Amino acid sequence: EIRRMSREKKIQTIEELRRDLSQSAIAILTDYRGLSANEMAKLRRRFRESGINYRVVKNTLARFAAEGEGKEGIKAFLEGPTAIVFGYSDAVKPVQMVIEYVRTSGVLRVKGGLIGKRVLSAANISTLSTLPPREVLISQLIGRIKTPPWLLLNVLNAPLRGLLRTLRARIQQLETSPPVSPSPLQGEGKEIF
View 1 (cartoon, rainbow, N blue to C red):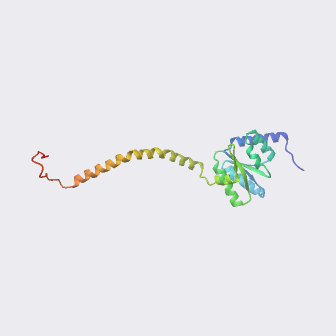
View 2 (cartoon, rainbow, N blue to C red):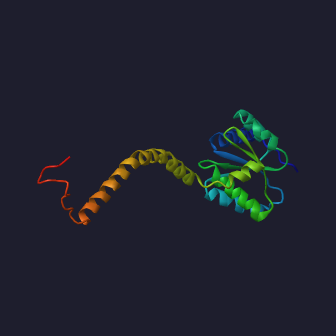
View 3 (spheres, one colour):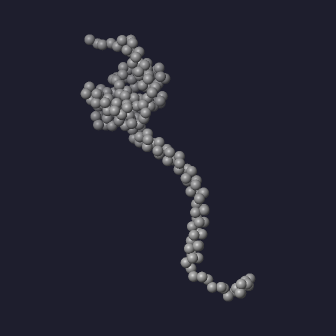
């Protein structure tokens, strides 16, 4: 007996997928063939604990949702068994978790994905997994933004620092050297030249 989805349930599923596609920072499409029901449950739990949604989708319904959100780029990946990872706050963390699971299990296969409306190949997603977390990227960016003003300040202050060092050295030299006796060319308070 084949269970069919009612029309209302299909419409509800399409709306849920549209919401997930519109609210997610990244969507990663996977082929879950070979994953047991127990492994799937464990994987979903791990994702859920990190605020990531992982759901098996019907390709036809996912196509309708993608068209409704203007994200037709994923339609090329909607062949065979498909489950989608939706990451909402950070695009890198879900990618790292998926790629780590692919490496350790050898079962899950990445088909492709989306960041916004930009389509990502499986190779793009693998490359994205090497990026540091969002917080680290932000701190690196802030550090680089702050660097140019400090460089300018250092360049402008360099001549003053050099002059200051020279004056300090001269003062120290005068303080440590013996007093100089008057030159024979100088008279009593009168200079000859």
